[in-house]
Amino acid sequence: MCPGSHESAGKRKSGRTRKGNPTLRRALVEAAQAAGRTRNTYLSAQFRRIAQRRGNKRAAVAVGHTILVIAYYLLKRKTTYEDLESNERRQSETASNVWSASDTR
Image (tube, rainbow, N blue to C red; front, side, top):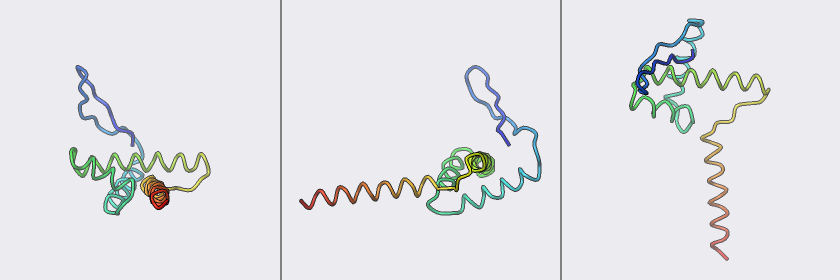
């Protein structure tokens, strides 16, 4: 599920995905398409960002690869998944609470 790379004269050209388990690839692409339809998540933002310039199918493959990388590190580190988008939102809320508390003094 890793993206192929073809570069010529410093320009990145399109490349095919490499060999792998076709069933796993289909499952990851389907999960990526579902993740693209969710709201306020890191994966949906990535899907929309890539789909805007590359198209839905390429975005699904890219997000599927991201899901695979996330799954690998979750298993390797024996942790649970915490979405980056919600983590950033939580940090910005705490920062805004600090600012609003300092403004009232």
